[in-house]
Amino acid sequence: MNLRDVPDEVYTTLAEAAEANRQPLNAFVVDRLTEVAQVTRLAGYVASYPPPKGTRVTVDDAAAAVREAREAT
Image 1: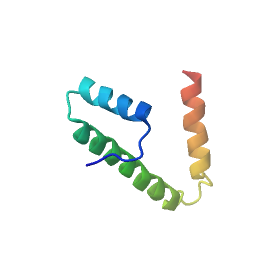
Image 2: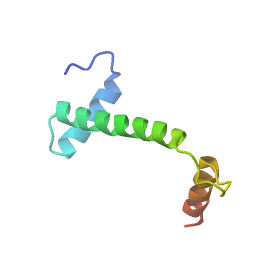
Image 3: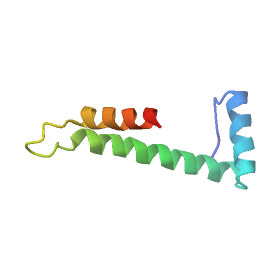
Image 4: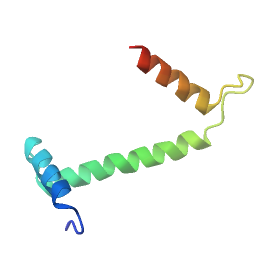
C-alpha cells in the first residue's frame, strides 16, 4: 500500500506507532483502517436499531446515560 498525500507528521507518527507495535507500517495501517470500518458499521447498526417497545428509551438517552456514568468515574 502506498500512502499518498499524507502529511509528514502523520506519516512519522504512523511509522513510530507501527514500530512500537512491532508491525510493518502496512500491517499497522490496515489494522487501524479495519477498526475504523468496524466503528462505521457499528454506527449504522446503532442508528437503525429500534428502541425496546414501551420503554420510550432512545439511543440518544442511552448514550447520554453512558456518558454520564463515564464522567462520574
